[in-house]
Image (tube, rainbow, N blue to C red; front, side, top):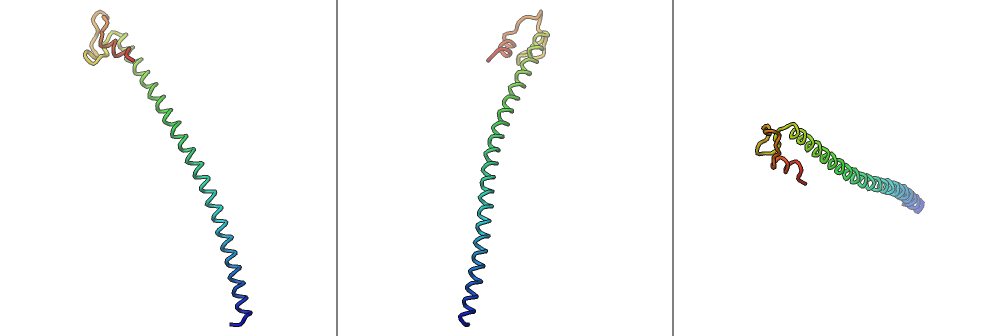
Length: 106
């Protein structure tokens, strides 16, 4: 192999190395963008999960309030809502300590 061929080979090798380096840099920037996007999406996902938990808690509270209101209506209609006499008619609309405790406990 003469000197000219050696220099041409080294020149080709150098050009290929430069192209490979440029490709590696492009991949590096792509990965950096993906990592940033991934981090952003993870934060958004966390915030959405927290918001969903808050909405579920408030929905549960509304359901409990509606259930308590329904029990109160049944009691006002003259029926027991306590576990001891549930569904039985209250005689002369007398108060029931069990029902009142159930309706008005904290």
